[in-house]
Image 1: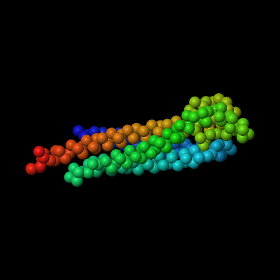
Image 2: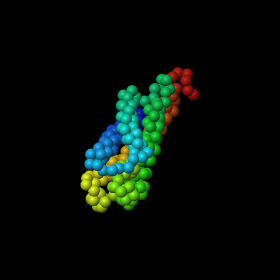
Image 3: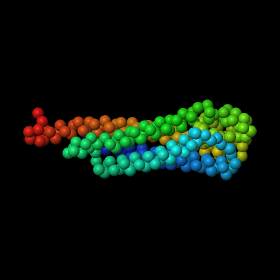
Image 4: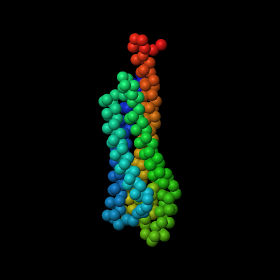
Length: 214
């Protein structure tokens, strides 16, 4: 039963990681496309620690998802705990949990700033007025509540398209956070399954060996 549950959990983990790879690659692509689009159309955007933080987290998310995807395949091929050596088989679930927890924390930082007032139209307008030009919050978060077909985005040439790119990036960021959170839950489930299998296996072996057991 434990082997069946482990197989089912790994099956779900595999497809979640596939989705995570695609989402992280799309997110990195959106971010790069935004920068190129704004540079080519002379649109101004903010920079700061968040701007560089995103450049680290987004590619890192894709790389780690690919690494864990390969590890999941290896875990499926080579099986789980080795009963002869009494190994617990917790190496992969543990690594999956640690990586997922770290990336959940990193993506949470990004998503929290996207939900703050700093990404609303009012803040964008205030920043634009103080600087004397329209400034997009590329280096900050961009709220999904912003209407790209309304002022001030429609007042700037190419402003609507830039707004749509920012909203797409924000939406995919929430998807990445949700997928890593789901991966963290699944890693905890795998650890519980492996722990149960580890505790049951020695008892069965002991009962099968002459002179061993009770």
